[in-house]
Amino acid sequence: MARSKEFEENAVLEKAMKLFWEQGYEKTSMNDLVEHMGIHRRSIYDTFTDKHTLFLKVMDRFGERINGRWAAGIKQSRTAKQALQFIFDSIINGEEDVPPGCMFVNSAVELAIRDEDIDEIATKAFAKSEKMLAEIVTWGQQNGEFTQQYEVKELAEYLQNALAGLRVMVRTSVPKEKLQRIAELNLRILET
Image (cartoon, rainbow, N blue to C red; front, side, top):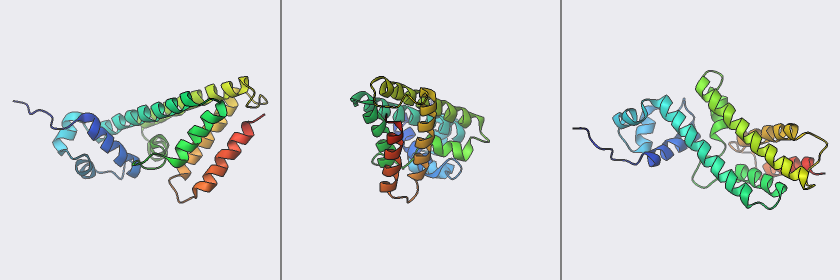
């Protein structure tokens, strides 16, 4: 008779996500996962097949988390500038009880050049972020907040690059004040 699962899959995925996010894929061993997730190695294999498949599920979970958080913040914003400020602030200040930075950026830097699955996930995530930024830039141009000197696509690409850089820098000891100055300059560049 098969044993029933003695854990909630979403809860252990959350634990695995935080560990991979903090340490990266290569540095996280199966022993680390067993200890951190609080389940047996056999349960990990039975539920997620292998470490790589677990990592892909974690990447999906991270995408849902960040997209939901950003969508909610943008929806609450009254102006395009306020929406972008929310995104910059969420990157710089992070969330409580999670590692700094972005799992997509971390994983792209660590693995994308040699792992097609990670490359595809990260590339799609960056494209989705760029699309969201283009929508915000369009909003800002339509209501006169942002310059129309550049095309929406160019500004969205520019912002995506700036956000990727900030996502890396927040994992270092760079002071938040410097990161805020960088964010503020990016917003000033967009103004009319």
